[in-house]
Length: 293
Image (tube, rainbow, N blue to C red; front, side):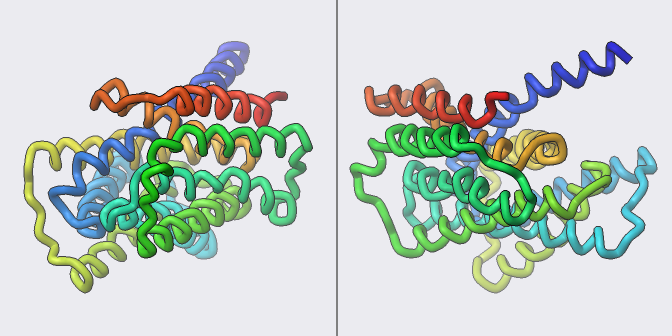
């Protein structure tokens, strides 16, 4: 019993930073892969591969499927929001000229928006200290992407795509917290990914050429996004939503752009300004205030 409690405590400590680290690499994966495939086509391949892996896992382990048809509908709807509209919105924005920094800033409103709606929809109480943390987090996020903001890159299509992504990730987080209960995360993720893969496959045939340049960089990005993001980070997000308050889980998304900035510095030699360094520190303080017990 004691060992189970200790393991649960270790998970509570390791899961949030691991989630942030894995989720932040999604922007790196998009940067690697999007030059070689259009966004919807890229996502159709990604989700088809992940769905196939999860189907084999479910069959091999004989995992039980949800018995209630309503739960299937809840999973499909939340999946379309989290994996469909959100991810597609970000990919389309970047593909059509929106910088990753401004995309991160717009989508970064999500923790504050989630905190605002989690009270009426989930009955969660957000304290004044936590709202202060959300404000600090957004300030830090703004400073982190200040270099990109100064460039004034704000194409209309990209802006609309980011707003759709923002609304989708907020609604998806709150909806899943409220309605998706008691489902094995591997089964639930599979039920979410299959209709999303089908939707992107159909849309890509209508709106894109479907041509893929199977360059090694694209293959690497596809494999990484399938394993690290769709299987690793999404599984952690599922567990965090199940175990924590929606507002606290959402606050972790504040840390993604700063970590992405650090990864860009380490991997691509991108410079970090003094404003960005201060922004990273302020963001960390804001998230600490939100999650302090």
